[in-house]
Picture 1: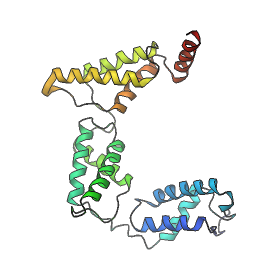
Picture 2: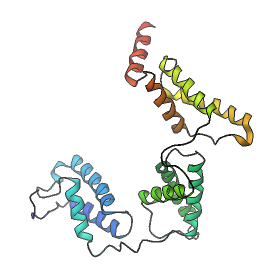
Picture 3: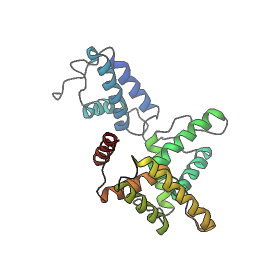
Picture 4: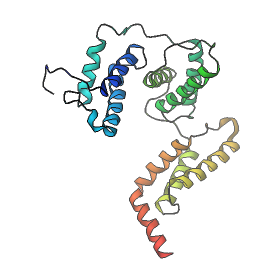
Length: 244
């Protein structure tokens, strides 16, 4: 879009963009970029459903939409007046930070999304618990959990596994590479059962339960290093079907 040419929104587009500006001013987005990303996704869906909704002068890229929204809130958005975390929110945050440290969540983003779900559940069930009036953006929650976890000593790069766990991951990765399972799901289910038995034997010294997605990623990564791939697995399954 040529520089200096004002953006003119169509009648269908304008409410979507104005809603994004209001959401940013209300603190529902952490940054102008996150507001623009959410708005751009809505505009894309709108234009797909209604091709005539696009104005010839409307924003055609995420960057130009970002600059438009940023200009709309310039001087209005209280950047330094972000609502503080309430005690109720801090308690939920601490539980999810502990979950991340103990391996219940694979990443801070996974812990953050679970924390957001609990925020919404508790805010609905107990409105007198001291919740913030402004919904927290998911990016703010994930970032807060990541910072608290790092402060508690968590490495941002890796989860520590014991030798028995890594042996189980390797064993099921080999079985995947040998074509013993049609997909990763049965391998992950059986591996987690093995890990549960191992934890029962070790008692207090056992590592925390590993989430399904965590085990899946470990097996998938190791199986790929042994030559397994989704395409090879699909070809093998197809040949077995034809043979039978």
